Image 1 (cartoon, rainbow, N blue to C red):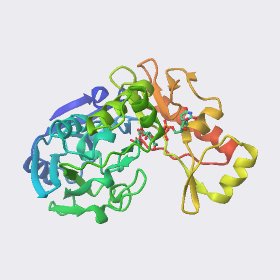
Image 2 (spheres, rainbow, N blue to C red):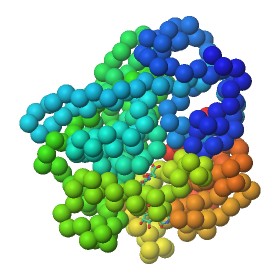
Image 3 (cartoon, helix red, strand yellow):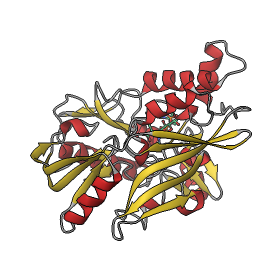
Image 4 (cartoon, rainbow, N blue to C red):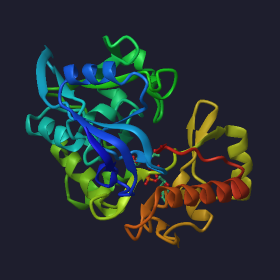
Length: 335
Ligand code: EPU
């Protein structure tokens, strides 16, 4: 247990915040021991630190979950169940699956963070969400200290959402996640426009899962800042979903507005709304909206505080509300 510990290297925004205490956990037994000894203390579980914004010091124990390991079990002729422990790095896990030619995760290449946090917000990119390949996950119930298993239905995945962000919030610690991947006859998902253009540019007609991964890596690198160079947490806001009638009204006033219908609702790209309010590339103090993707807020100078980033995001929410009447919701967890 370390005292007065800096979390700067444990959050991809790279903001300074101190935890009263810090410890690393390498096995489920250690985790259970810690939980039984620290019943009344606030705990902050850290995965890859890629989806949190630390706005203040943490008056409790920050716990880095370092559970490691990958195992496999054949499911049927064309499927394999691959289980990764929560502390495995997401992208390295995706690369491991590609090396073995297991299909399903290639569109999710290069997403920062760890496997254990992937079900929390049903991570997604370029036409795929983990719910599409998710089989089950094992969690530790913090009240009973018993291990429970959640299947696909029980996780109640939605857009950047799951039971772990709703009624299960704070109740479970994800220990491992199992994905059902294809061994052959892979389903190649190229619907996302940017993937198609990238493949065309590279002259690829019949892409393999490796080609898809390479295309996604190329697109992400060209648009999204690398947290190792510029502090950020990917998309800061969710893309809002609004009623079709509201969308039609907006379309009359803003003919360029885009929308993706989903039942009687329409999902609108937050990046576009933010850009229209003049925020793209704009910097205030140490914080900016990324010049190539305004949905991403960056620690532009490396010296931003969490509070500054939070206040910057509040200003964006205000502008978008004023201009479009849409209330943006933060995707990043505010601590
Ligand atoms: N757009 C703009 N201006 C901008 C940014 C975007 O007009 O500054 C427009 C684009 O032109 C495009 C549309 O908005 O027509 C959508 O943009 P993009 O394809 O970049 O995707 P996104 O909706 O902004 C989402 C995810 C990303 C994911 C990409 C690709 C959310 C909150 N974000 O972004 O996920 O990588 O799609 O699938 O759903 C993350 O969650 O951290 C993340 C990066």
